[in-house]
Length: 117
Image 1 (tube, helix red, strand yellow):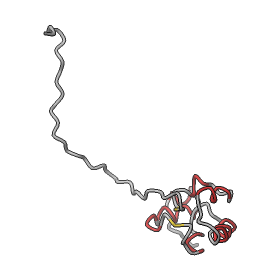
Image 2 (spheres, helix red, strand yellow; image 1 turned 120 degrees about the vertical axis):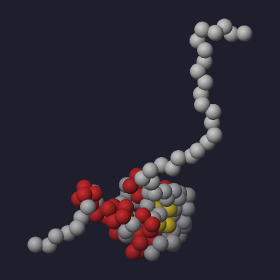
Image 3 (tube, one colour; image 1 turned 180 degrees about the horizontal axis):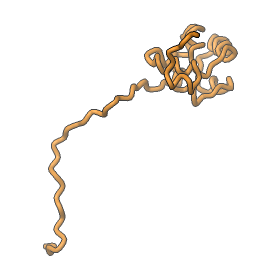
Image 4 (cartoon, one colour; image 1 turned 30 degrees about the vertical axis):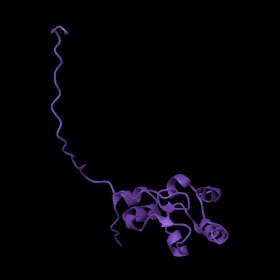
């Protein structure tokens, strides 16, 4: 019996998406410059979509509208691709937010029964 060391996340989601999430440093991939092998690693893009991207980018730069015409799930693909008019921010969430220390005076309690002068 072969035992695979798979995380809980890999069992719940697509294997291509799990690989992409584990290798975030390789994304976003520029659809206008990337080789075929890199395009095939993008979650949500299959062989047919990659072939159409390669054909389209020979004639014009790939834009978001072109990707949507391919009938791919843009909501999944948008985090992993860069086009001529779209580039997602690559941020890695931190475990603990960093605290910013600012010199601020403590709030004052307003007097309730004093007369306004």
